[in-house]
Figure 1 (tube, one colour):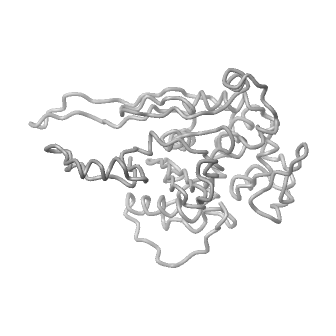
Figure 2: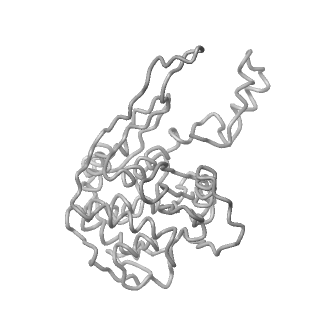
Figure 3: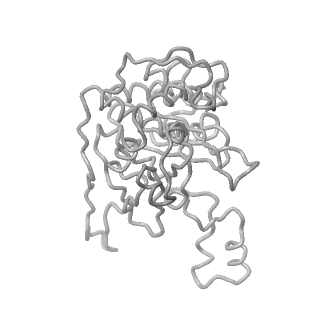
Length: 330
């Protein structure tokens, strides 16, 4: 886990000075906040992976299902835009993940409905406390019709589902929630509880306690569902037109999903948040990642390169110094 900006913990070792404490406590960038577990943000297009899993599992869509994207989606008296102004044309779920087509997932979201989106999110521990062994975790939110009725005494409108379908509107998740989503795909439907401590060892080197992996859920999705989603996430990084193609790693296949999320009404005038969730290697993954760059604008240009750097370091890959064109939209 890493959260920036941070602070020097040595300042607290022998009692922090008043001026040092004030500098940290009054810092507008909030260095005391552990954003990995305490920062709840709209997940943007990373959320499309959740919708794809549920819709494919229910048979609402399959690998041959297509929707046409002309750059916008008319619903009621509003046109919901796709990030690509000219549209993606006719796309399947594979290309919709690879190119992050909003219109495809607007359609999928309406066919699913918000309660079924909430259902799979809840199964995966998203929108509630994960139970990670750190204090101060935020639970986030994946909405439902019941949630809105209790909170506002109002009905849920399908137009709201359109926004939720691409990770906007009333959906807020932490980076730890989204690394669980990435891990779920990489681990073939197993949802692991996030844990910080692997084992406790005495000063003499004796193992006092070992913390075994805890599987919260082992979701048996319909055959072929995970393969379709995995193929899409691999294509995001490794296929032409993939939104994270500029972050392709030499000699190691990395899979991922970019996201760009509006910062919300309290951040008027500030750039969008940049997301990237990933795992590597694409086959038999040993690491899952969730990268958030606050106000980083685009997941493809701000967050995905960080995941690339982490992967290169972990797998001792010599960095590729050649420049690649970045998709500066998603």
